[in-house]
Each structure stands twice: as C-alpha cells, then as structure tokens.
Image 1: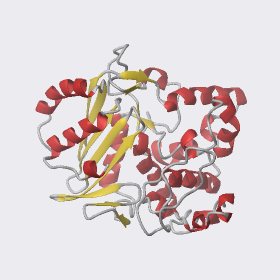
Image 2: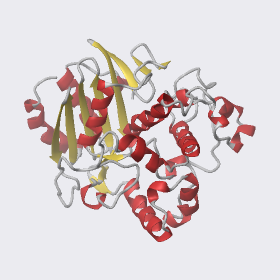
Image 3: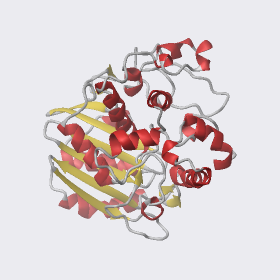
Image 4: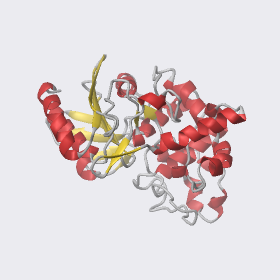
Length: 357
C-alpha cells in the first residue's frame, strides 16, 4: 500500500469538485486498522465526520449477512444447496416455477437469475436465466434468504445478526436497524450537487423504533410479518416489497468504518469455507464468491464489494494474500468516482470492478 499523505492532502479539493461533503477512509494492514475521517456529515450544519460517524453501508451489508449464513452452515443447521422453497414456500412458485430451484449458494453468489428488485406490486418475480447458470446481481434473492433464516432460527433478522455476527465480531456500533444512538452519529446523504437528505434507514427506522416501544416487542425481535403489519403506520406509501422494508440484509446495515474494517480483517484472517472461492464467473477478470466479488490483481486474487444507496456510495478492496484492505464510505452520490481514484492511487493498478459497475 502506497504512502497515504499525498492522497489525504488532495482529497478535500477533489471531494469539493465531486460535491461529496464527507468520507471516511479506513486502512487494514494485518492487525492494524487506521481510520481517516474527512469533511462533514451535513453540508449545511457542517458537523464534522469523525471516526465514530455511522454510514449506511448499502450493499456492503450483503457480505456481513453471508458470514451469518455460513456460520449456520458450519454448525450443520443449514444446507447451502437445499432449495429455499423446502424451508419457506412462496405462493408465487405456482406461476414462477424457477423459484423452486433457488438455493442459498445461488443467492449469495448472485446466480439465481432473479432481478435486482421489484418496484411495484404489479412486478412479478422475473428470471433472466435458469437458477445456477449465470450471474445477475439480485437483492430480491437476499431478501428471500433473509426470510428463510428468520424461519429456521425463529429470530428476527436483526436479533440473529446481532447474536451471531455483529456482537461476536465486536462490531458494537453496527446494526441493520436505526438505533437511538445514531441520532447524533449518523451522516446524512447528499444528492445532486451536495443537497443534504436524510437516509431511508433513519427516516423510517426512527418510526419503527417508536412503534416497537409502544408495542412492547423489541425491534430486534421483529420478523418479516411484524414489519409487514406495521408498514401503513411507518409510511402509507411503503409497499410490502423487499426494497421498501427494514431491516433488509441486502442494504440496511448502518456501521462505522472501524467496525467494517474489523469485519474485513476477520475475513482475511479466517474466511468461512467457500466465501472467497469463485462460485460463478462474470468474465475473465471477475467472479463471485459467497457474498463477495472476486477479482484478479497483478499480484494475485482480491475480494471487493461496492455499495450504492443513492446518496451513499462505498467501496471495499481487500487482498487476503498481504492481508491489506481499503474501505471508503462516502455521503455523496458521486462518491464512487472518489473511491476509484483512491483505490488506484493506493494500490497502483486499475481495479476492473470500476469498469464493470
């Protein structure tokens, strides 16, 4: 990893050009984690980004959930290759027979063929190919697997992730649901040329927290059915679709750079079986493991993922051979441009993922 000093001195000007008010860069070098906060959480209040600032992880949520699923596999409590319909039948399978074939292995490697998300109640489950025969990025698959994990464990997905992943790994500032502690620490996103807007997870998570307190059932114990029942009270325009619901293992993780860097550090030290093994090929440069994108660097294989929740753009690059990683979390919709420049300068090569994204 190259010297950070020149990059850190240039980033404020480049962030200004890109209308990205704030970012945090974390570096991992074996057992050492360093966090570099730059800019502000909110363009108008000018509250500074700090090492404790919480960011929406967006799709960086997916590998964290994958760790939890693979933990159940290691304990013999779940089968990656058993069709999910055997655990949780979906009524739509009568008209969409491909649903009967989906497995957790295909979900975690984006090989189900399902579309990314449905955006209307009129949208049906659609398959670009037969499950297991190609790659297509799909949040819908992850949300179905979320419901399956709730079914077989009897836990709400937030409680499951806290008990089996976040707390055991020491990720004490992370949650798939908004927490009252985030009132002061969570960054806002910035659209267009730096216009601040509060993230979906905060706006609706705050309402869910109030509903949970009134009901007497802790929010961490809420399952899909509880959220479904509460949707009209959370917001009248929300639809009973994965992309409108919280928690959502595909996208709703809220975390700090230090927490997520610690998670990546654990993976580089002892990855669960299959996590960093290619499951499906994208092209000759890229493939997908169980939860992670995989790439061929000049010096060997690396793993990566990006996050895109509109006004929040993130990227993680990690080299398990050297046990070095770079994490960038940003609060502006042009953040991926900065991520690409940072990765290129600090690694010395053009990461193929940025041409593919």
